[in-house]
Length: 268
Image (cartoon, rainbow, N blue to C red; front, top):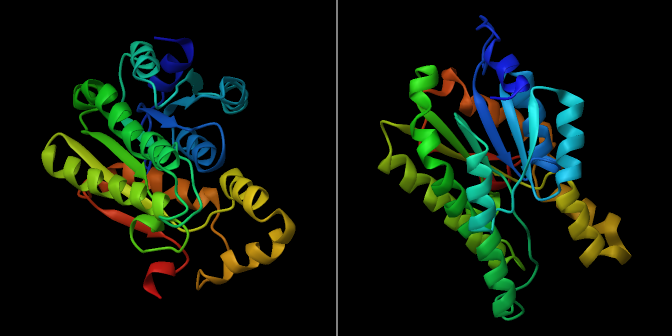
């Protein structure tokens, strides 16, 4: 066990709500966007966090900045990378499956290679990562007296149809189905929930605007805001706060649930 892990282990329980003292978490895609915000929030709650990302320098920079965290190289599409990552851990209480990619196009404009790539990164990786870390998660209760917790970062795209998002909607719908199935399969030994964000201000969205709407970026940004009744984009910290809640003791009776954080999109 590393020095940072021992420091996190030594923290005492407090009476503050939504605390995660003494628990160990891993966030995939943890070096940027919603993943980065989640890492920061879980550390703030008292957890030790593995910043699992393919971008190791970014993960190392974040871990060094916030303390009680450690970078971990992880290619979520590679079984070998996952096996290596698992070998670095001795315990895990919280897994946040956050890594993912997007795609723009109707079914006619989505080439088979594009579809396969999204399925590989957004769906198969959740299966591989969850399966790889499952033994540690199922052993979490021995360490803390609490069952292990998985929070999958889905999307509003898994709940409603969105034009020009055929492959993305398909993959996010699959993540939500996996969430429900796991929650039922492991109802007494593991809590599994999903968060379904609307459009959030992240490098993910900025990359989409730069790639597909470079000539009219601000016009499209205004459209993205307008399709959410609240009239703005979400913030990564707002999603991270829900991750913290779902991982906490206060959410002990919640499993198999999907939480929309979408500015009213799915309510409209």
